[in-house]
Length: 290
Image 1 (cartoon, rainbow, N blue to C red):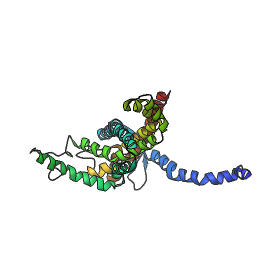
Image 2: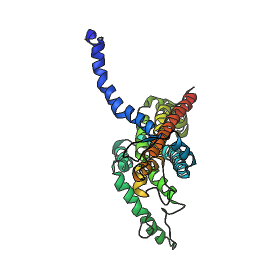
Image 3: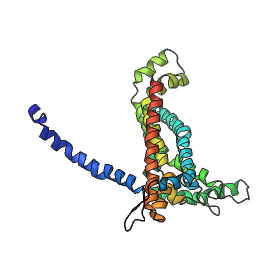
Image 4: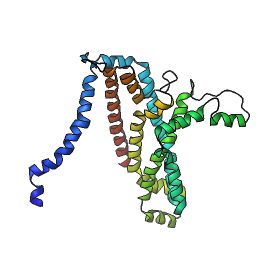
């Protein structure tokens, strides 16, 4: 067996299928996307090479900057609101034990197993200014004004609420798994020493969860940048372009406006931002570990 696995031909035959899939399904589309980013292409006919004109247009495109701002705002919402709450819920779930732990874990994760289309239309009904749930609650408390949360000025905040709520289950589950992997002996020793719940969380749970936090925060930033389906079904980027995000604006330019070259230029910037964010976050957590 050792002789077999030391044979270079055998090693190549085992590695080749995975390498071929990577080159065809991942590397080639990225290279083509970079190339089309330097062209004017409508999806039909031949692509015309125009150099960096798409990127010059991108710098002056106010909608692109709005989409980038919204994506970064969502990332901040994930990191500063969703994840702290998800971690606290995970810690509390770990302490419940028994059937209650399993029941509440399922309840918190339910939004993540429901179709995105169902979630979007559910919240559309909740936000409906004529007969939605929020409208009914406001009527019940005596408020008679008209409230359109998906209208101008408030739409972005309404969308952020939906996205933070919808992604809560995944964040909670990852933190829950991290908490479960902490040795209970650590908590027992802290209890013997008279540590309070807050001290135990700050001195034991939080430091030992740093690798999990790093993964979760990195995934949150990338998820915020590539957010598309829920936004597209909920508002289609409107009103105007107030709720455009990076991925939804890319889709709009490439498949609605048939500007495939311009859409690919956006995708190149999108991938670059994801890579930079990943590297920066890795450096930040490395410094914290040191």
